[in-house]
Image (cartoon, rainbow, N blue to C red; front, side, top):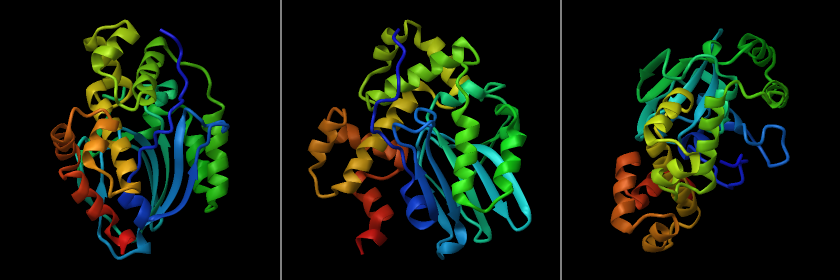
Length: 279
């Protein structure tokens, strides 16, 4: 098995959150010290619009979120559900977040991600301090300033300096994720087994411990996110062409995948998430 690097332009997103609530966003480029570790760092404010809900799509990511509410700060790792969900927001909240490349968090992870989970409203929360070594140091830095740029620099210094692979299993999980991402979800799990040289059962165990989603689900989410991103930039394109380009057997196969993950067909999902932008 060759050692892979992230070489795909794939970028998972949360359109509803990004359009309504993001006030700052830092995209990690290929030359950045965070490349292959972090996809995006962002800041949000729920007071910026009157909407009371967010539509959260499956994105396959683990995010580190610092949530500020009045005088309290909570920090946690968060996994989105494997199907679309609607989350109520509190307009007194603001926050700061880091989106990790799937599989990389295993490089700094102490216990398996199958431990210490709490699920609420379709989101799964994990204690950050139990997973990220020396987390309190980063926590104190983030809460010490309101500057988004300074927080980004703290994250670059903290996560960018981590190079050591903690154990062989975490590296296997990272390589498996990169294989699926680099092929944009178009490879099968049988392809992944052949590439890894391990059984699907063992690979599923790795994903449960280090990724948070099964390899099959991760592959489905990558394909869904990639196809919807391209559809949202060109909503008048043929759905047959979209299905063919992104590895679905046909329109029916793509529609079933969207219903399973987003609970809506592609055109309906686009209309509901991008209606304001269109207007």
